[in-house]
Amino acid sequence: MSARPFTLTPDLLLRAYRLGLFPMAESRNSPTLHWLDPEARGVLPLHAFHLPRSLLKTLRSGRFTVTADKDFAGTIAACAAAREGRPETWINAEIERLFIELHQLGFAHSVETWEGGKLVGGLYGASLGGAFFGESMFSTVTDASKVALVHLVARLRLSGFTLLDTQFLTTHLARFGTVEVPRDAYHMQLAEAVEMPARFISSPDPAALMCEIEAMRKEVP
Image (cartoon, rainbow, N blue to C red; front, side):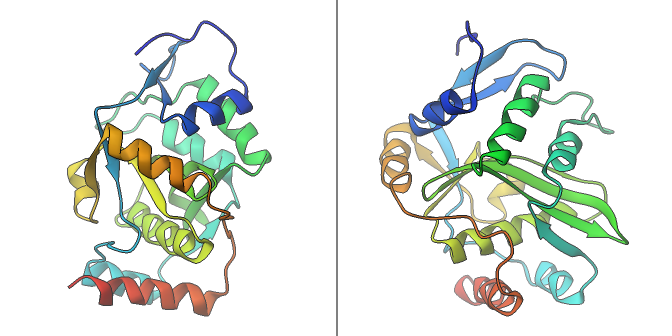
């Protein structure tokens, strides 16, 4: 882990992701970024997603409206904001700036969860070929970020992606099937995925999207 000695550009950031690196800041107000390439990487297999029955019921209920790439700036700002129980985040102003630029270039995407017209949850990440690098998620009401994650996985499957990198394995992500992959094995998966001709579909056909979500429940008991 080393401090960056130069100004980052979106192109340099994408080159780093291609090599298996990702940046983090020590705090929201930190002026310095650090590069990480963990010995074990969190990976969520796209066709082994654990969709709990209760969450599928929520998805079917229509309680939330889910969009993609509708409010990227609002989503990353909400992910970076301090919350009760989480006074600090690793998303500083530099990361926020870089990802907004990546989004404008088509290499970063967000999934937003809305309730009553209000943004209540979501996530964002970078994409390169058939690899999606999940960065952060937020939720202000129960299940809002979980719903966004399900919609992300469904869109990635429909779009031809083969790798969903979660960076680290957490208890929360493990519930959905995330596993740890050794660094060398991850780099091999990454090298194959970034060469895939996938393209993120922000607004897939609603029927196809729901069919993909229903299929997740059938795939894993």
